[in-house]
Length: 207
Image 1 (cartoon, rainbow, N blue to C red):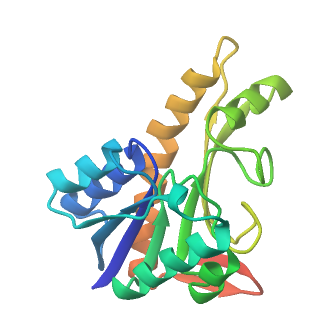
Image 2: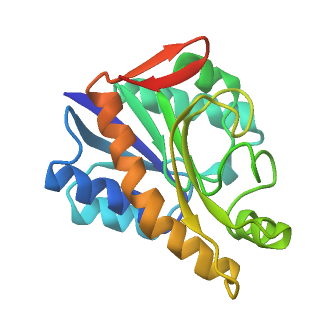
């Protein structure tokens, strides 16, 4: 049984999707053993507490730079014996000391079809604002491994939704979360925990 550690910074809707998927048996071969938040008092911590999942708070604001903060996160991951790290609305970019130590063991969900509308500066509603401004007809989400470059790791799964003419960023965001993120993130986690993801030449393939 693999130890899944989830990193959060906010409300934790993706965390809830993972908790529900574990309870319903969608996630096989793994268990959420710890939730680590970059902020105190966020609702994601309450979601974890309601489900008897241990939590830790490592406040980003208490560290002077990304490297020192990332080292604190790395120490915590090592202490928790993490087999898989899931970024679920975690709003801090981790230094390479973490991404190299946990190469192909950190999964993130990005609310667009990478390589579109991704990279530094593309997060939250900004992604959906950009997609709508461009006039795309489909959008979606990408589940990918995390490496040293923002949103550039190997893609595991992608799913799409149609963009409607009268969509607002908020409406599109909700459609993508409900139809893609909350379904594919648990699926990717389960695939990882069952050793069903293969890396060939830096690309991820589902076995």
